[in-house]
Amino acid sequence: MKFVPATEYAIDTNVKDTNVNYQELSTVASFPFQQKVEWLKQQFSTIHTPWEEGHMKIKIRRSNMLQDSVDAIESIDIADMRKTFRFEFIGEPGLDAGGVAREWFHLLSEQLFNPDFGLFLYSSVNQMCMQVGKASLMNLVLNLTDV
Image 1: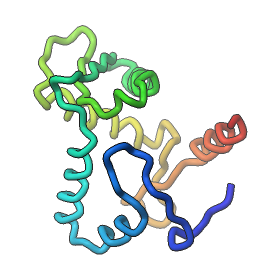
Image 2 (image 1 turned 90 degrees about the vertical axis):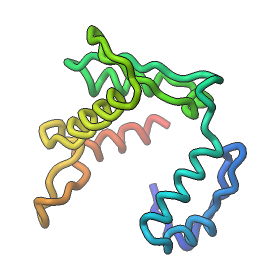
Image 3 (image 1 turned 30 degrees about the vertical axis):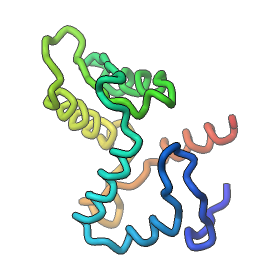
């Protein structure tokens, strides 16, 4: 693996119906935060599949949230990644009008950044920051050697 400075590397997107490239990202990087948010929302809206054309239902167990979530996301075809995701906790009644999705993102983030999992650890410099854990780096190296 070789790291290349962003200033020396540029690639046009291959996502249909977008024209995002390094030059545009470089320009957007200088925007104030709220303007970046609006730009990102606009980019999402250009590639988003309307609800009427289909959506993805993700069913997971609370007791196995991280693994179920990884399995579910990995099983989605690339074309379906543009669809709206609806979440359901197995065995729990609930209509995902946004609240279930918000809870899923919240709980999944808590698990991903839980130092007990070893994916991310508290920074040795600043306990308010996280850094990639050695276990994550080992998995990355192992996965790259499989390619």
